Length: 222
Image (cartoon, rainbow, N blue to C red; front, side, top):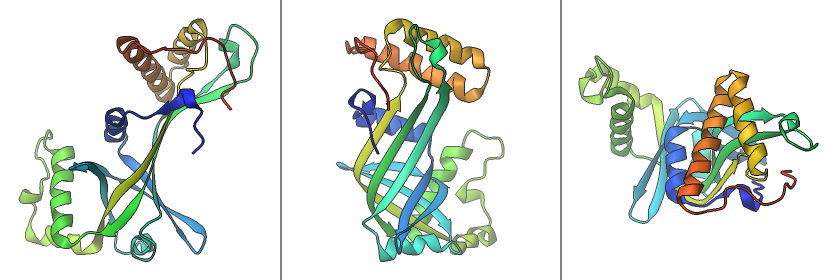
């Protein structure tokens, strides 16, 4: 994806946390030149120096067969909060834009065996159920329910490349940046609020690390 230098994120710890918080991703492959996409809950794992994404889809979904026929060309996309940014919020005239956070992961896929899939399901249930009353955990399921594992296909993607873009008005001056946050909070919707939070958090994080929070002049974000 196209990422201007001032929106590019390279800190893998930061990217890993983003993926953890926005773990419902889009898996994309191609079949005879046509893009195929499936939206799925996914998990990120680190093994040694390597990172992997795991997940599963219905056996009836033919998409998983692409992991066998073309395993080396898999894209996973993660989308964070996003919001329209009105140029009326700037001190000087300019055009409106859109703020967003997105991560693209490229990797090589393979199909899991049943033991690996079961282990992945155990971890997935623990993540989303362990804090719930009457938690639905693998060990609490009946043998009959566990047999439904036959109806899904697990996959594991070894990450080869990561691209991350946080377009959060870093190209605006400090006055505009602060005003954008205020205006986003006035919008009164979840996406605008989350973008404002991300801008506030990133501003504070850059300050703590002694990094420049804004560039010295406003430039196009196209």
